[in-house]
Image 1 (tube, rainbow, N blue to C red):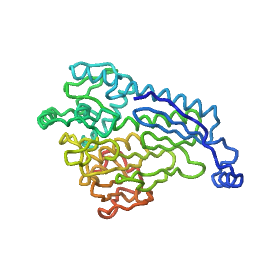
Image 2: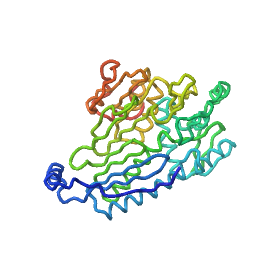
Image 3: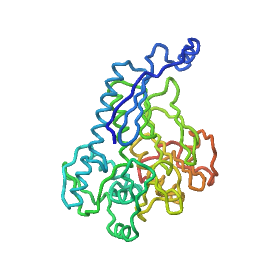
Image 4: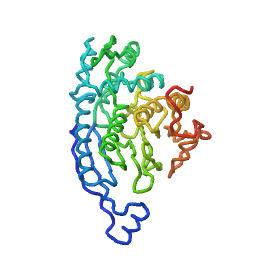
Length: 369
């Protein structure tokens, strides 16, 4: 994995004067500095930051801080390259405690209520299972041999859980040596939240941040809501969603990180802790929520829940704006999400939209069942 680096230049506008003036009048951007786009390489993926309405010095200072912060988080959170997390996992496997940086403690504590609300469908203690399936890699599809049935049976017998992880001050321990922490299903959410905090601290009011295809918004895009695309798990674009400030759009699916089954089917990197095997039933899940941490974890939990557990898990996690496309090209969607999404392709509907409430934030996790 490469450390965060950037290739930055101002986003240029059309040269036709009349068109440029018209765009600025419509967007309310007369006299504003040009938008700036920064691309960072971190967490094994691309991070894009677009900033509007800030001068070059302000944007540059914020982006420099973000780049340094992402480099630091990579050194602390990486699940398989040498990091604080791999050091902690080695200690847990040996039955020992280990000191942890504050950011790892924060990941553990932010994960606890989401793990409980999802009934363990999202659980960062499953890193050993992720490694066994070959998903500790940046190269896809995975071609290594899958774990044997005997290995999986033994793993299920000693199934690790986040509630077996103890934090005492800055030290982390567990009585179950099978616990291996992997925050891949929440790290981008917490990183996105932190990036927005940095931008706001520098006085930046309008920005769009994308980490590996997941998006968080600040303010607006030139006087209009930010509009971002939804990837179709069957190829191309599924549609788009307009984002307001402080909204997060997180998605996951079987289209990028996967391995092939012996029959040629896609086995996604999202693993079902109940079976120890790749989750089946869903092809993609999209969550829109004000909290990027909850949106990130919830996308994984809903994917693992599959079509049969989709509504139950969404209610448990307090989600109002959710969408799933199944492996059979069917769609489940909530009422609030249906009002926000503009589809360009319409999968087969699995019934009427689910009434999970009028807003994307339906309440605290596990508030409804």
